[in-house]
Length: 358
Image 1 (spheres, one colour):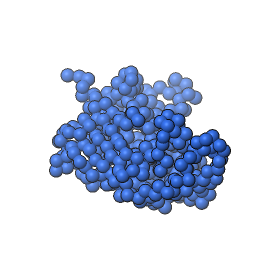
Image 2 (cartoon, one colour):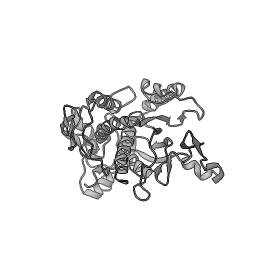
Image 3 (tube, one colour):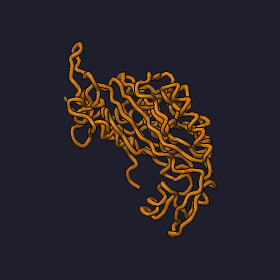
Image 4 (spheres, helix red, strand yellow):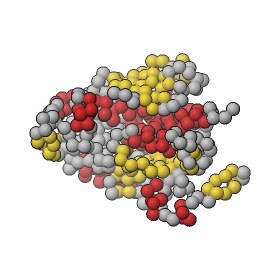
């Protein structure tokens, strides 16, 4: 399997499978001299880890990375930063009935067709367990971005049909105070009630995460094949269950006139800004200094605790039913992963920009 790395200057390479002994990663190209706060890394991991609330999968993992290289007294050395995360709460027997069966909307069929073999337990490499590595790397990059005054905030915009009202006042301090990780108290109550009813039915539901990257300097991104929004989009689409990504006015742009969509430029105290932000902080693939705004759409979790028709490896029709521990909706735990991926890409582009001028 190729393509286990992402990034240009700051490059993350990962390994491991959901029910294997461990997962891990190597973050290469990270600058020397940054003293890392390991407690902040642990805090980011806690936002992603399973079993954190009654609304998530009840798999219990500590998700504490054991750093093997690249740090001396918690200070980055410029060498590859490597870590492992032990898997301690696998229940492979929950998947034994799927040995010869393809689950609907899972990667079982495509993996089997491509490689001629697949890991049934937990989905192997295709499992979202892999994303724990991304959060480690993102937590490291976040601390680098803090030195540049760059801030990344993400929250749940919608769960199924329950959505934060368009003109609602957002409370970013509330995001980590509720299990949905939304930024609107009234919507949080409605989302939680709805999600509980979905779980009782043995079903799942999708949702949307909104993200904002603040204080991004002008000039990040390359004009052609390394556009900033293209690299952010690639990172986001690498996340399990993502079916759509939009920046700024996104798909709504297709319904607008040019006179409506154009962001008027203004000079405010010597800084060029725009009156609106339909571009989402990006022009020609390059950051323009305005906040980078995006929405990410997630499909429902494919494993449902209901009977469904499918086929087995012999092409025979069968009935399959999910078992074990699964999220009814991935977006609350995915908030931390989205922020981590954004941090990884922005850090990479900051260092790429330093190579463009003398």
